[in-house]
Length: 521
Ligand code: XIL
Image (cartoon, rainbow, N blue to C red; front, side, top):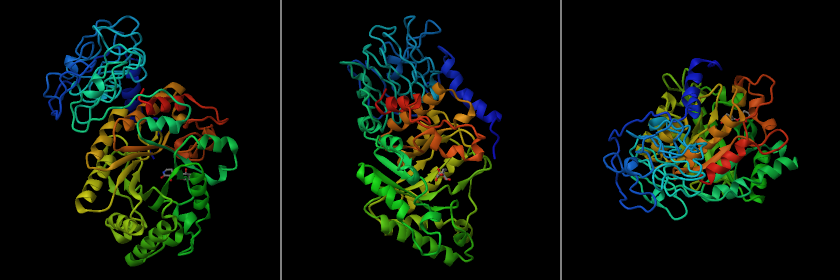
């Protein structure tokens, strides 16, 4: 197990969060020309001449009040410090604070938690309250768009990512330059909505599903169910795993799963089945099978019977879970297919076979591969990327990839920019991506604010990609989190604080930050 306090985590944390504190830092990535624009807007209202791709002379450079304006004071970075060669920070008034976390370029997180209050330098410059230009800028100046217009909802540039999928937000009351202009091939504007009163209403703003893991044992708790009703997507935390469903060979127990499905139906929630083929929570009788044909027929029988039972009630299935392994639980080091009875007896082809059996059992459910420490850019996520790319090329019926997003010990702590990059490359294969089990390990020493920022930025990374279709958090209240009993998380008896509600079902800063990200702010 990777140590909780090794240099890697701290380096990466520094990478993320020291920048939050570094005002006006310029770390432009330069306009490296790696992305070419496929569309170019030359007269976007309010957004000026924003964006275009790398080859464009526009982009951040031409954005009034945007990235090409040089910072003149160390604190002036309002909103539009969206990376780029000469970018960062508009000139600004002394009150500008937006983008304080931005560093331009690849890891730019400008404006993430920023606000760029009453507008900032440059003529109609960048954003007003709520401006967050550059939140997800990751590609230097290629495609960033600075908000303009100084209106209170300016968010231009929020989703810019180096051209490939750039898109700005709206630029204010009348300004729409950010949202129209885009330099990339898969542009999509993030819609900005006022913050409603439930998560599911917030998720509707940008057409996402917002999910939680549901535990049968908690459904008698009215505080729990009230919070659960905020979601429109549910994953049974344990009730559809092999050790529950088929603890004896060919003897199925669907009761717990049915309970979750019924609760979901009564409350208008879609259900993600979890999970069909996994090395863990697997009964001994499966692990003890000794021949390839015995394992194959047990696997296919399990997939077929379980999917047939739940057919019509399940929107998507995690067909294979956690098949990849690396020496570090953070996803670094040579990735190999994990030893399991499936891999050991059937061979690497068990994954293809599982997806084929799943498709045959229920052709209407979406079929996902799901794994942890595969959110950012690392050896493990590269392995998953290459695997699913190959599956697509071979015609294996896979619809998407789940990135679990258990952030922190013992798992990876990726930057939001990396997550965005990984989500976008998977989407470019034509696959859906979902954040499938998000929590942030509070026992790692995060503050309430830093946890809220992590939630915000990672959820926003999903919101900015049209093919990122769902965000699921792994539980409801902190007291019910699995991290309280997961020894590797290092909570050691302390109350874990990884979720959106505290142990008394009070909404936390993380809840508010997810609301904001879903509504484009
Ligand atoms: C966890 C559950 O939350 C716990 O209740 C259970 O004891 C162990 O499994 N990755 C997954 C989930 O895919 O199924 C795991 O859920 C958490 C890690």
